[in-house]
Length: 583
Image 1 (tube, helix red, strand yellow):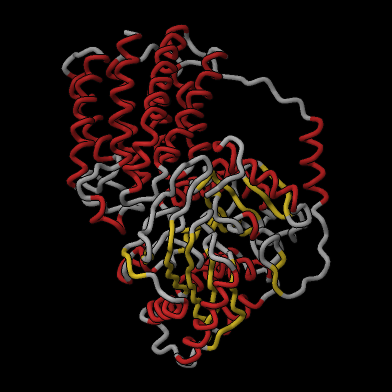
Image 2 (cartoon, rainbow, N blue to C red):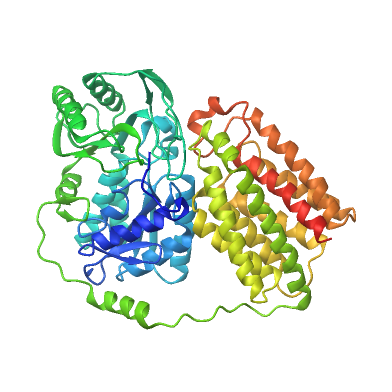
């Protein structure tokens, strides 16, 4: 378990602060993460990676020459927000465009995609690539749905080495695609991980058993088997990966592969070496030539006891890129000439931090009616934060049945930050629309992950509909909720029946619109819609998930409601109470 921390909510920020203090030779801090401390040649493509905290040395430890130009760092097991990614990418950009790279998780896909749109709006040519190497999370016919685990490293490195050679953005992207298509990973675990401040792990494994097909966010394995010897574990890993070769590899004999035996947090290096001796022998027996193997902790999951094996099948070009030198805090290979520090950017940053006087917060002008409505909005956000806090543990337990168990933690982080930002804006005289949009940005930034992106979208849609000019009536609120429902479906790609929050959001929005059309007051219409939401959330227990982290464990979730759907239903009922109090 994680024993050394202060406030668990501050753990990720404090860890990043300590990391940058310890590694000033390689990195410098920027809002949202870190970038190289050394100068990047003008016109070079910037490879910006990122993901949640809890996986060190991924992602901040992989920033440096020969590897990433920057890393956006989210909260524990939560993707960084679009604003954080945009900040890091802007700082890393050297005029050649930006390639955003990340593991294939719903939250990362959403936030990196939004960041790419913002960068493009700034005139920065941007591409994205999601690593999807974990063969246990989807079959070959659905390989695009696989999550990214330790295969992140060889794919990141291939693209970054290509960027170092001065290739243009489209060619760097093609290298990433080639490396991703030829990378496969598979893992096993002997115990789950425990997040800072938690009193129990996200999942447990019975004595003398192991979980097979684990994820790196505390997701349970797709199955269990008897605890193996080291040699038996090696055989399982190798044989599983050799069963699925890239389309252009007919037989492993005579092929070359980059090999990574990755420790997930508490399996010691000596244990890894015992396993690797057999991995190497088995691959040799299959005729595979191993190229520059890596054995150690490269993509971790806090204190999870587990290991994963990654094979990247090399051609001449990928081998050149895999062997290319790199110099980062946590990954070094070969030799590089002495680097020039990025004095220009560093001095500008330091001067700004040392001398700048923070500007007084400014909010757009608002009418008295809208400022009055902001009182109700703030009360609703307070009720929302309170109900999430009261049910955070329950939401985590529901999420852990088939997911990673952090839904309650993320919702608590997001709702608390949203209420705080809303209170600050309200104190400055903001109208209802601005209070909601400030809350939306704060929720997305602090929660990260899928829920952060979706709840940021919900609050922003409501804020846009309400605006700062008029007192919103019931019809205007219903319109905002309908807009939010459409935006969430558009952004996340889920529809009713997929076992997500959409299964509650759509019927809630429809019921609210119908009730207001009948002429009911906002409080009465919301009451009816909240009752619909509660029933819809309960109904998700009978569904099998078709999207998100729970999808690989669909059978386990049958009989349990979706955590996102359940939290939304709780929130709709809590907000009704606030509406009654401010009726």
